[in-house]
Amino acid sequence: MKALLLASLIPALALTWSAAGPVDTHIATLQKATALSVKYKVVQAGSSPQDHSLSLSRDLKMRLETPAMLWVSDGKTLSTYNKAKQTYTQIPADKPTLAKLLQGESTWAWSAFLDPEFAKPITSAKPGDEINQKGVILQEIKISRPAGAITEMFDGAMGVFRGASYTKDQVQVFVQVTEIKVTDKPLPDALFAWTPPTGATLNTGATSALVYADVKPIFQQYCGKCHGNDRATKNLNTLNYDALMSSNTIRPGDSARSILVNAMRTGAMPRGGSMPKEDIDKIAQWVDDGAK
Ligand code: HEC
Image (cartoon, rainbow, N blue to C red; front, side, top):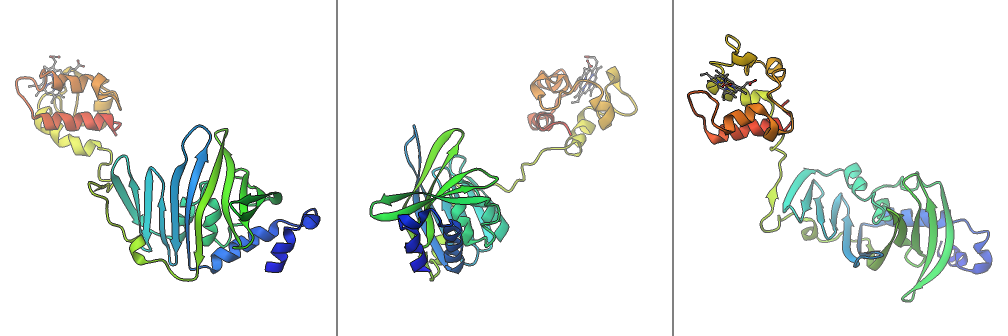
């Protein structure tokens, strides 16, 4: 195998040489490996290089860090941390979910660690230039695939792709690997243990949209007497969803311009009484959520 790879670097053979070799070798190397760790820079014209890192270990252990995000899978749970919002979500870790995370151009090559079918979408792979990157000889492999063309840098000595270049939003992007390790030993579990960063809060998705059933009790308590099924003053019935929505006092998604919300905010309603601000806020939230 090694002899073949070396042969491929001899210019005389370059014309007849098929680039299927490097793709297959890359997949075989990563499928065989127990762990992979990569430190790389994503370099884009007009902005400063960004440090990224990726660690993968069997079984389903992953740690991917970019300047904005951190993904950690301990093999069972995938935690996704948004650094700006300081919130994280957690979902069960499985192979398709982790492989999908790596589909972005900068990490695509390394999804072969998880996905033996990695080569499937590739429609062609052709050798390009040979590059000497600080003493490491890299062979450009120009790959066509439905998700877009990408040039991977093949390290024949290691048998893996290390680095890439592609065009995103008409800007040329380079992935420059500063360190890559492919090993037959697992990486330490501590690397994949999820400890929420200080100040981080778990986003459980509990703040999902309010629905009519959530606010109907408020209407019952404060409005139903005058705007209910028995008596609908001004043709406004707050206790029947369809009737309420046909009253034109609610603009779904826009509580600030909804007559019904403003009637409460100004204190005009409930007529002759009052209601807590929290209840008004809850109705406003329901309207902003789409008044479903
Ligand atoms: C004690 C009776 C009473 C209660 C309780 C009451 N309203 Fe009214 N509401 C009225 C009357 C009477 C009018 C019509 C006169 C007016 O516009 O001031 C009215 C008018 C309105 C209008 C204007 C309708 C239009 O098309 O112009 C809105 C909106 C409204 N109420 C919302 C509410 C909401 C929301 C509540 C509960 C938080 C509520 N009202 C509670 C008596 C009541």
